[in-house]
Length: 250
Length: 230
Image (cartoon, rainbow over all chains, first blue to last red):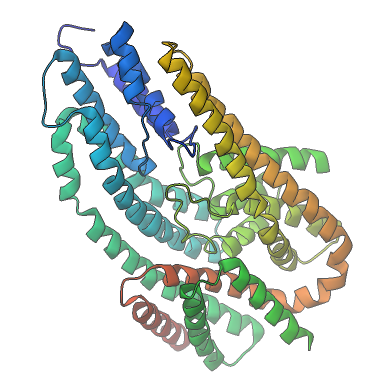
C-alpha cells in the first residue's frame, strides 16, 4: 500500500481486464460471485492482509448477479468503497449494501439496453450488409455492438472508481430505459425495411407478381401472434419448412 | 482434409462458445459472426454468411438473464456451416439448398447445447462449494484456479455440442440428402427468405412497446412500395 492509500494504476488495469471474464465460473448457487471476487482479488490482496483479507474475500463471495457489461461500474465503485473501508472512512453505504442495491436494477437496465436493444439493432444493420453479399457483415455487427459495450465496461469502470457513489447518479443521467425504447423502435423500423427488401428479392428471383409481396405482411403478423401465444421459434421454423416442402412438392 | 476441417471448425466452436457466456461476450458467438468466420476458415465464406443470415434472428430475442439458458445458436451456426461446406463439395450440391438443409437439421440437434451448458454450470457449482470451504479455512489462493477452470468447462461444453451436431448431421446428410434434394432445390429460395422473416416475427413478438406491429407494418409497406416504384 502506498502513502495515498489509492490503488496503483497497474492493479486497476488488472481488475478492468479481469472483469471481462466475469462469467467464466457462472454457477447456479451464487451466479457471478467467483467472477466478481476474481476481478477484485488483486486489489483486495493489495489493500488487506491476514484476517482482513480473509474477511474481504468472504464478503465478495456472496451471491452476485448483474448484467455482465454493467459489472464494470459496480466493480469501480466497489474498489473505491474498499479503499475507504481500509482507510477507516465511512460512506453512505458499505460495499456489500452497494452491490446488493445496484446489481438487480443494473442487471435489468443492461438486459433491456444491450440484449433487448443494442444486439438486435447491430444484428439488423449487419444483416443489410449480409443480404448485399458483403463479408463485412460480421465486422459491422461486432463494431456497432461493441462501442457502447466497452464504453460501459471499461470507461464506466474508471468513472466508478473515481466518482465512487456519485456514479449512480451518472448512470441515472444516461436514461438507459428510455434509450432502450428508442433503440427498440429503430430496430423495428429497420426490421420492416429488411423484411420488405427480402420479399422484394424473392418476388424478383421467382418471377412472381409484385403484389404477392404484400402477402408477407399478414404472414409475419400471424408469426408475431403465434410467438405472443407462446409458440417457439423452432416450432415455427419446422412448420414453415414443412409447409413450403408440401406446397412445392404438390 | 475432412479431419483438418473438423479440427479447424472445432477450434472456432470453442472460441465462439467461450465468448457466448464465459468470455468477454464481444459477439463472436452470434451466428452472423461465427458462421462466416467458420466458412472463411474452411474456404467458403459465402456459405457461412448464408447460414448466418438464416440463423441470426431466430433466437436473438431470447434474453440470457439469470439462470435462463437460450438454445445454443452458436454451435448450430458453426456446425451447420461445417456441414454445408463439406457436403456441398461431397454431393456437388447447390450451396443454398445445402445451407438450408444443414440449418434445418442442426436446429433441433442444437437443443443438446443447453444440456451441456447446464453440465458446465453444474461443475462450476462444485467449484463454488470448494472455494467457499477453502476461504473459510483461510486458503485464498484457489480463486483464480477455480474461476479459470470454468473457461475449460464452457469450452468443453461448446465443442461437445458442436460434435453432436456434426456427427448426427453427417449421418443424416449422407443418408437423406439425395432423397430431399429435389424438394430443397424447389423450396430453398422460399425458405432462404422465410427464416429471417420468422426471426423478425419472433423479435417483434418479444418487443412489447404498444405500437411495435404498427411501426413494423408502416416501415414494411413503405419500403416495399418504394422498392417497386424505383
